[in-house]
Image (tube, rainbow, N blue to C red; front, side, top):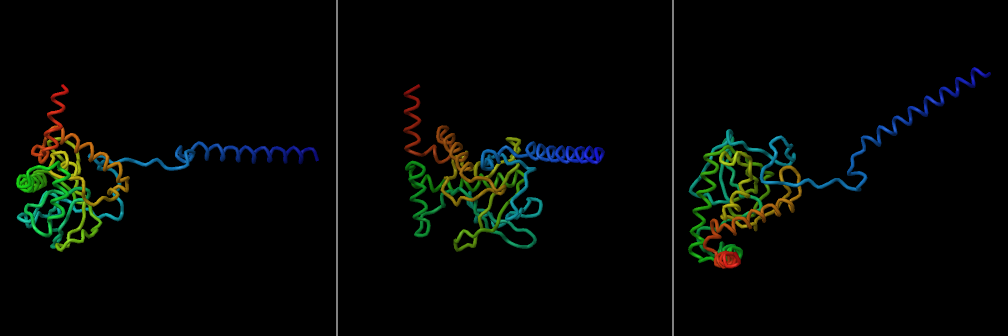
Amino acid sequence: MNQRLALNIVLTLAVLASIGYIISTIVERRPAYLDAGERPTPTETAEPDPNERIDSQYTVIEKANCSLESLETWKGDHITVKEDGKIYHLALYFVECPPGELTDRTRTKITALHDYFGSPPMDEMLAMSNAARDFTLKTLQENNFRIITRFQPTGDPNNRRFAFVQVDDQAANKRRYLSAMLVREGLAAITGKASHTPFGRNQRKYLEFLTDERSAAQQELLGIWKISRLAQQAAKQREAQD
């Protein structure tokens, strides 16, 4: 009887020890964000990690598998490529470049961009459309890139689809978004269609980053900011304060 009782005690202690180990393991492996009540929101930068997994909603078109098409129709934020015999007309998320001419169809956009860039001379701002186009074309011709799109329609008559374009910027030795590069050069406004990023990240964080890029371009009077009356006034005030 005493032997059976002793055996039961031993078995009970063994079970309790096992349960204690399992509980301690679960607690040890419990992610810290669960204790805080929510998963921390990752941020997006202009230098995406090439090893990160892309959201399954998106399709990737590599430069090696496509060709640049209809170059005469390009704008800074509009490109055309061909992959496997199919033509894709694409517009960048987040940004807009000035159209090259004032028409009934472009009037609303041009007026908004004119206000955004601080009232530059209208004809000079429209002429910067060519500078934005040349920048995008040169960037994609001279660097490796990939297009990441879920083919969201823009709703324009040309059947364009929104896309992100990531560039392996050889000069900076890092991967960057073309949208951020255009903003940093003062050639695009942050007034385009926003979206969660290809890595499913917070669009607000990326907008904050673009805003910082815009501020840098403004202070250095790059691109359209060079002819912006308000940016020029701000620069003179900073000089006077210094």
